[in-house]
Image (cartoon, rainbow, N blue to C red; front, side, top):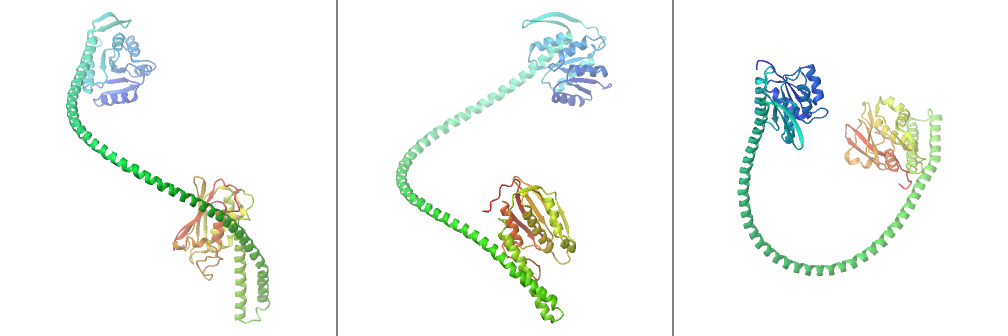
Length: 491
């Protein structure tokens, strides 16, 4: 093609416009698109196309009005104008002829037919040619149409109509052949199905006879089963009565157990409280003895005094831990909103000396605010963080990370360290009172810290657990409700 042909496609459907543009560009036409008649006029005034292809039905200005507007303009009327029509409404054709369209393309169109139509129109279109126009008035559906079209326009319409009829006839012939084939297949299936139905009827009658026999047997079995159920019902009534009695006894025992538990808590508190005074006396006098007679006693005596002081200190810590453990439920104050970031900072201040001695690194996510007891939250974080600082290999600087994740109804906290780790068999044991995994010569402690943590978490309606790997460290997880309800001392 010697000259580049510019085509303007006017189509409000973006999908159809892109399809037509892709087709035309594959034949080296330069294509521009427009969404309606008004938009097309603006583009025509800026860049005059060599050919216009327009749909009929569009918003703002349809294809017929666009064609009439261009054909009434002395400088634009010679641009070849093709209307896309589906031939669904005969009046579209009459209005197209009335508007002065130069050609018609029937939708859906064959690509080759469309390209040939465009080539012929561009090749044969001569704006200087004097056309013989036929002026006539046509009445259709009580509407009057003034047709001013030349012979070529009318012939193109007839050819478009003829092509559409031929294509429809081909489709009809193809459908008739397929229908005939389907009819033959249907007859074969009907014959086969009829034969199978005869067999099915025979089998069904046979099955009905068997079902009748089964029904008689079933009725007999139901009768026998009903008698068994009546007997079982009587036994069940007796069992229910026995269970009610057992539940009543169980409720009474539960009350007794709760009372004993309260008494044990009170006993633990009183015992640990009352033990502190004589223990303080032993510790004080032992320290006084060491101070006054340090240089007057031999090394063995000094060692004995140091053993006594160390034992008194460890006993004091153990009694303090036992006292705190027994009072976790009773120490709960009225819940108020606390900032856990501040709690962690307070704990770091409390453990400052140990942090500096071990050169520990402690990092933390931004922790939430929640309703809780500040004293117990401090005790919780301090116990867990002090364990991470304490249980590390010699020469290893502790690394502790505190993170939190929001879940559906609670917060999931985790405290991860690079300590010595805990064997999987001891995951449950570490939360039990007085359970130590190491001797006091290896690591100090009372065996109460994690038990206190577990009790605090449970009183706050949460859970606590751990994951660990020997030699690599541990992660302690615990949950706290996002909206804490009133905590009961019955926990």
